[in-house]
Amino acid sequence: DTGVSQNPRHKITKRGQNVTFRCDPISEHNRLYWYRQTLGQGPEFLTYFQNEAQLEKSRLLSDRFSAERPKGSFSTLEIQRTEQGDSAMYLCASSYSGRNTGELFFGEGSRLTVL
Amino acid sequence: AQSVTQLGSHVSVSEGALVLLRCNYSSSVPPYLFWYVQYPNQGLQLLLKYTSAATLVKGINGFEAEFKKSETSFHLTKPSAHMSDAAEYFCAVSDPLSGGSYIPTFGRGTSLIVHP
Image 1: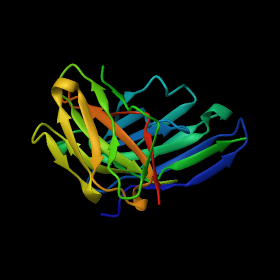
Image 2: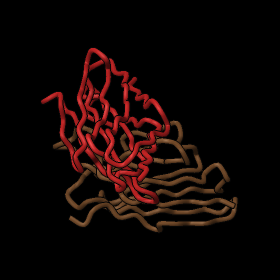
Image 3: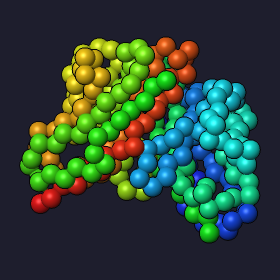
Image 4: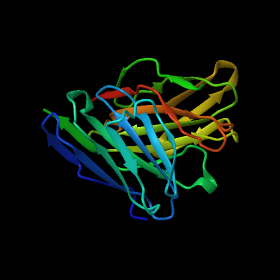
């Protein structure tokens, strides 16, 4: 069990650029979640996958955001035409649906700074 | 809809003193409840969870929490604070009747400050 891995850990970009984050979940976990955390706030749900299917998306996930999990393993979160308001920590988490209670295993996050 | 309220964005204690972090939830059904800890520039780590078994739940690092349905509370306690406990603490709730999604909703967090 190597834990949830996120890359890159830090990303600084200029407004208007596109960025992509990658998440590798715990290998036996079939569910993968993306959350956003801004300074002084708790994590806010963005979207989650079960295997390769994206089952739910938050209203926070605007049209500029897209998430994929093409083979039910790793996932990517892309933000197009970044805005300063997108600056946040993007957290990935995973779980196994067979034992699911809402307990999530988090990665260390990818911090985005939009200049 | 479910929600979590954490009273106090900052709690300051002396080393060796009792730690009490408050969490109240709102849910239409008895929920699953969690406490997570986050150290600077790191992800969240589960401290403990309540999933409808014993109402007093013990977690890692000497923390425990008690589910009180009548008060809709799940406060986190530790008898004696240690400097290493300084971190951000998040309470979270998920709905067992959510059709299997169990997506947890998090509170805004409480920053625990421990003074020597």
